[in-house]
Image (cartoon, rainbow, N blue to C red; front, side):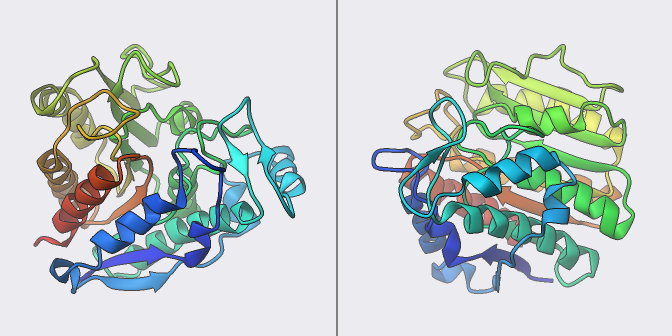
Length: 310
């Protein structure tokens, strides 16, 4: 079965302002990379709008009301202390992010594809139940996990995150549910300051692999092989969702890790192997960070090549 890609032009209309690293050019770079001849077999689908009901799987009603009421008709609206910004196109963009992730879950549930990649923005893994953080408004990876439970009856769902920043929002949403697994590799110390090894959730369902600044392939792969992947195998998820951030790439101007394209390909293949073992191959990947346009494009290409491989 082919790999699906969900995207929508509305995700280009989220404009956080001049000089902001989470720019529309990020998605332009991703889409251009995935239109190369090597990706001709991809099946492209338009991301639908997510629903308020889907968002409320993770976020509080008060917070969703706040986001909707603050959505500007012109100019900019800050949602946090300074880096999460709404523009007139943001509300539709984030609802397309939610819709893409949930539609991807539905597609793999129906057997329409083995896996799917959501080429959407803005990213989501820092957004907590009741607040925006770190460029993120709604946490589409966590929403997709709980949508999978509500719509398809799967109980044991994992989100694996290799963004350079720890996904505090996903960890926060999964902490008290032993049937939700969150595993993260990330730079530490670094924003947002969470993700220590001792943060393990209610039932060891949280696994953090903090990496010192400057760490590269060897440290990343060792941490995954020795800590995260064995815990994931023991958890035996029925669905794996990937928070696919590419700001751990050596080219990234915001991060301080030294991952190469081959590392993103390698971890994707490892996660696919686990999905084959416990989840009938079901994988949904959601774009998170990545702020070098070249590193983002090449890292995404390596990741999607792995998703497409037999």
